[in-house]
Image (cartoon, rainbow, N blue to C red):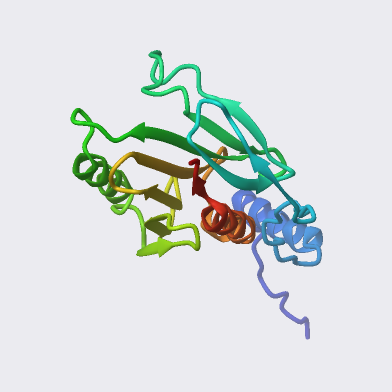
Length: 207
């Protein structure tokens, strides 16, 4: 008795191609991997040391870090600064600057206006800040003022002003010359902020 052969069909060309692709993909799979988190360059922090800032155009002194340089402002929005005592304190190791401006208090620039302008400039960055800490400061030399410490993706995380309310008004603002990344800049900011605290604590008006 003859056995019946089972009927079978050859796969369609399209099915054959799909099967080959599936086998090739299975054969090419290698070990899986997890992308490494973005790394940031290591920052070398200089040893803290200070020197006295002196300038004939400025009616004050303070102690500045040895590892910073003074850059005089010669133009402000393509115009001459309001006073010769406008300058930047540059931190080459951290690619940041503190912009300083000085105003003699007068009828044209009374303390009330300068004070209001300083608060206004600080509040302009408050829209992007996640938190702002503002508090009064005073040092042993009778110099007083206000500090604005802003957290979040802001262009200038630290601003302050110092004044005797009758003759002098001095303002500073810290700027990083790079894309604002609060998490990666936090250690550098903490280091620079300590230098700013030293500057404020050693600031005095000339007699």
